[in-house]
Length: 597
Image (cartoon, rainbow, N blue to C red; front, top):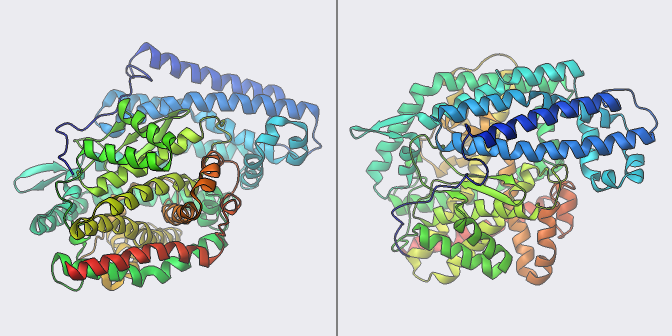
């Protein structure tokens, strides 16, 4: 399929600011600080504060419209500042000027968080139905208003909320930064040389099995040496989560996570029950792969990402980007043109390098404009990841005309477009590639990702549940965290894997150090996206007519209501079983090809 370009692209952040030391950046930062101060005065002037419920007045309507407009304006300004500094520190965590700018920005935005909480508490005292009948702004923000009422019912006293926000800078937020900075700068000795952890972990896909094993052993040794501060970070974050959940009146941190992800517990329970039933299916895939890789019955962890099949000459950057754009065209010209724009305008940082964070993400910067971080490898998996992140960017494009209040997409729905785009590219590759070995490689890349999102995510979900439950009693040691991780992996991967597991996966994944239960939304996104793709295949033209509007509405209703637009019942186990059945068909094809290989 071509060779990889000698130089992978780095993203261009110059359209936003020349540098963190530039007059433009300092002026934008100062403008935000001034706007936050103005908002505080506006809230004082209009009496926007925690108060007993009272009949709605004309003054309340005017206050709501003024405060909402001011908040939307500030959120637009802060988004570009935050994205800019994040773009710098995640591509080079050793950039001290960027780290300093990020720290200063976090501190200066604490008052904004306080004002946001104050605004939400005030909304909780209003008759929002009456407000929507008297204000076109409120009517357009119906779902965010309903969510604000729910959140307001779970707020602590204003002073406590303000204290929690301020202390988070030296609490959960600081622990999360420690994890990100430490892991991005971690170097691992291997074969007489030191390599960044991201490079060592990338060797999990190397064709040389002995090198994969040695990299795995070196990686575990490095995590073992770095585990103590990471365990302290984990304990600190989970303790804070438990305390704040209890003080805010949530029955369980998971209740809060479901609410903020726009689903209910019956939906989550239905999805997890279906996932549990699918584990034997995924174990069949893992055992089939084990026979291909080594002839053994079960996979050790270091073979979990081993290449299978033959991708021919590889998927270099130039070939991969053209393939994605071409097959996005097949869905819609708008999507294909959008992908080409991202390549042309250097929206993507694809080059792995020291100091750069591992993995991939997409962040919105200004309305309709994003930046994508990826550590690109010349494989179909690299192309699939590119399509996935471009899906997020396309979603941001569809939200371009929405206000920040209207575009607060939960994680569950944030994966909708990314999974859809990933599926477009996978099906296109299977359609154009005829050689059995190449088809096997494509199926492997897809199933490897699906196995991670269903089986491994389930293990992470179990692990986080166990840690949060035990953290109510005391801190957990490194050994205890590793033991809980092993138990979660054995319960989900089962006899698909050997006893060589990854007990330090809790140290690897940054998701544990950010939002609580950041894991299950990925599974939701995969299976919801597959359900939508199935509807697309039934009636492509009708689907296209409503899909972009769905993406533009992901901050305007809950997941059940939005799914119902396309006839999806996400509270039904049958829906999740059907999506998992699509993956089951791929596993069956994989087994057939593996048997003939």
